[in-house]
Image 1 (cartoon, helix red, strand yellow):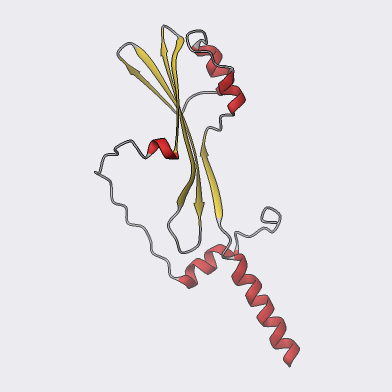
Image 2: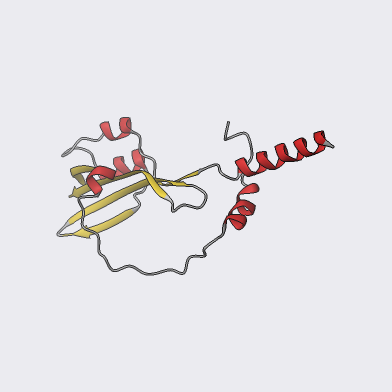
Length: 147
């Protein structure tokens, strides 16, 4: 009887611990530093940049200039907590006459200096209790990627 209880406690503990694993999600276009080093301000042309980095996340036209934004971020989700930004990077490329005019990189430290619009759209987010979070996370564990 004692072995049965110990075995069940061990199984329940294992299930509970696997539901507490954090989940990292990456979104956007991943740009490698060595690819950015190949770009030359004043020389690189739009089609070369497109071939090297791929299509941008956002394209904007202003004052006769074309602005390309490449956005990438990693979000860490932990059970019973709000998701946190782990990494954030924006690469801004400004073109004039199809040539690279300026290149700027923004990360979490520099992005905090930007004043965001305080007007937000409120969404009705479902609030889960501990039991529901536990049940949602049990199926996410695959063992291979978390070792």
